[in-house]
View 1 (cartoon, one colour):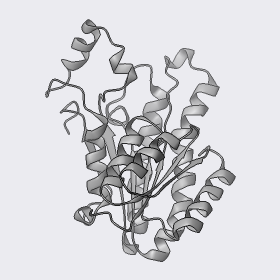
View 2 (cartoon, helix red, strand yellow):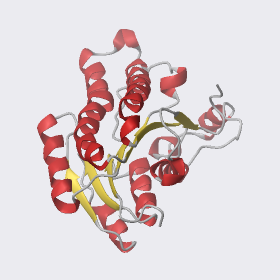
View 3 (tube, one colour):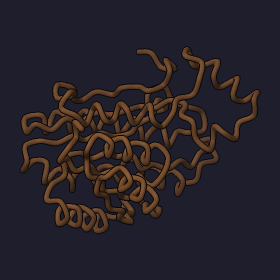
View 4 (cartoon, helix red, strand yellow):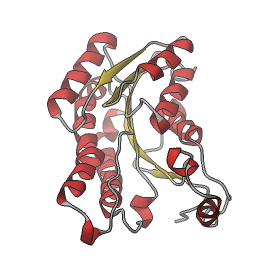
Length: 245
């Protein structure tokens, strides 16, 4: 229960990696706020089964007014925000020459502007507390690039730069800021791959398998804890060795 009495906010926490992180932090003792455009009641129910308090808020993180209302609601309920996990993200894949401006804008709005808006709002209580953890889910694509994902890669590379800059701004107030960069993680997309496609994918991964959402969640719990008090401004890959600096 190393996160007991902590309040954690997870964007995009209704499913997938975000849900896995929410459950992991709850198991460690945190109270959880799920902020998602999808309904998060299923995640809330699972958290409550663990004996922790949780709330689901429907939030479009690209809208400043909705982000502000969500943070105000969380503060009214718990009076503090200790952990922010910026997990919400989208893809609109396509080769650059065929990419629509709307597809570029949509990805940058959610994956980068949304992080800016939510982090800025959540920082106010953290600064007053002189303590906090900001954890953003980036991607190895932001480090290595990927054909057909110039918008997504740009957003994740931007997220890494944003986090490094913010880490320097808030370090003196006891707030750490780090990124997790997942590689190939088991999802509906990877489940739909043919055996041939899966083999071609895994040949790139030294450990020879896809990761699990729980692998990302385990790192998020560590970074949210006091055990990671001396780690900030870092991007840590969870990718089976796909990218090695």
